[in-house]
Image 1: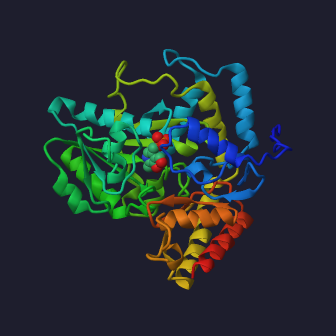
Image 2 (image 1 turned 120 degrees about the horizontal axis):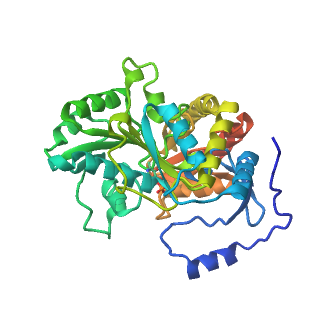
Image 3 (image 1 turned 135 degrees about the vertical axis):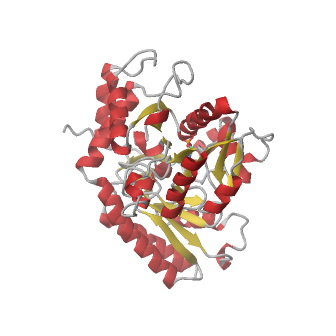
Length: 427
Ligand code: PLP
């Protein structure tokens, strides 16, 4: 394969203040940003505008699955953009058809719709659920407490966290929240208006909490019994992050009855394009034609460019056995994080997660954090940045590791020793 590796810019401009100034004058301040302006990357490393190097264990929140500036992605972008970047979905294109087939092959009989983001993929699932229940007057979707499903109006209504709803009331009707991993609560919450249940396989923003196998199998039985759609948001936890294409495939591995399990709809995004923005949802066969012509659309969904990139990423993931890498190196990382929890209980409460979706829960009331009103997760993340590692906060107490699927063992080792350094400094 022809190598097209972008070389890092030779000149380093230490212009953090200037960049931040541009933002404060011109960019809507809806994000709480860290004092860090990033410039370029290579593999698992990323550089700021001052030339400082960071090990990126966050991958743009589970997006850059092949790390930064991967030659296969660059090549796919260059090659496809020379041929065709965009056509309307009024027409057929081969890359979109081939990519849909690749996704179906990895999940099960069904069909795929392409979107541009995770929130938009979930919007499609909401519309699918409404269409499914429409003729019987059913419209309500049950979602989990602490879930996260995106920032659109329906997304925040679906999300089981008050902080995303605040200031945007009234909420779009048709969503209710149930405690996660509690089958009895799900059964009790079903009303005559309920049409679907939507959960994440592993809650991400909520703090890295995997669904239990019993919960998944129980929800499937419940949905069959009550004629509800079972929908899964795999936007963050999907795409090989847990060691299997979708997280439920990993959670149910070896569990009796697990091999037959399939949800009715799955949303995806993030790693699907490796940083090129795209999303998708898959619908199981019996319901795959519910959204017929004219019912759902988007201008940019499934462009030849996005699909060519996604097809190339599938190829790399398979050739380089990256699912196995996420599983094996993820197991090693988790053991190490558990060791830190045992060794430094006043700083680390526990470690959890699967594969390359790991969470480190910080202890309450770490004395060194007492003088700041910032959350423990944010303060820990800042200390990690000072030590040269990017990690992602989840909620107020959890640090997430979502490294690229091609993280190398020595990089994992470097990450752990930097985390231990920061943990030790807080004892
Ligand atoms: N669903 C889950 C589980 C997510 O983690 C996210 C984003 O973090 C979304 C949906 C929304 O995706 P996007 O930000 O691409 O709209």
